[in-house]
Length: 410
Image (tube, rainbow, N blue to C red; front, side):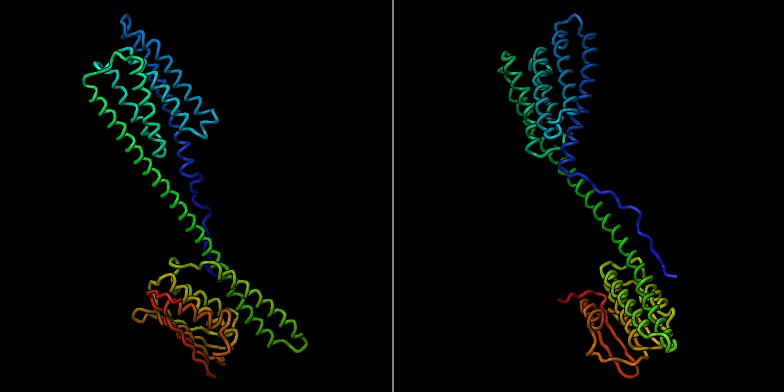
């Protein structure tokens, strides 16, 4: 029985959206979540403020402005979820709402006090909030600077009496530093996220490629073991039947069947040649053993094999396997051999491959097209190796030396 390898049942899923698409959707969702969070915080603040500030002058601004800010936050949630424009340009929609919210907060806090209290310094919170938003540097600068500037300008225009402030340079420098650091950190985080996304996409692509290679290897193995070699064995059986058949059986029938087998053999070789053979997961001795076992079935031939090969690089393994396969197939087809010998052994930094038969020999210069001598020579010399044929009346011997360290030859 030939060994079958089942192909993977499913391929790993690869990212189906680009990083830019992911950024737009993520920004929209995060603004939506932030809107919900701000709404809840403001609702709690309004209730607490009414209790704590009841009967004081500071109660009125919050009582008026917080419901407006809740309305702005809820509007941002609804816009991000249902407004078509937010799906195409979520950054600019988010920027519009952030500017509006910043201006309303400036009006609210300015009514409570100026630089002598904590009110103006709430502006420091605006820039770091943009850290959670995935966007490019230019867009990030707009999202970071625009609402901050809106807060400062609204605060200054609505309450000019707070200016000039004798220590204005301190909050100015601090605010510039906060905005700059927030933009830099946000951009760095965005680039790291991009790298992670690209890496995940590359890993998924490689996993898909490896899964496809496994499927191709499995298919090539099935075709090779169950079709190509069986075809050769069937041809041997057909030749035996043809020799044993009486003269009453038309020879054209045997010739026709032989032609069909030849066509099938050529087709299977073309298909297998286009697929990648099993490599590291299938040792060279086991592959050669299976091939010899299949070729011996139904044919009056014995194949002696001695394969002493440890770990072999994938390319060298493929070349050695193909050379042995082609040499054995040619010997069965053309040499009418009864005994074949296959030997593969390590010789310093190379593999020494020998395939010999006791057949009738052939003219080396007359053969070599297609999958013959030229094809085998090109495979071996492509790795920097050598190939030699010795053929005569007593049989044919192929000797190939395949370096384990690949040397490319044009």
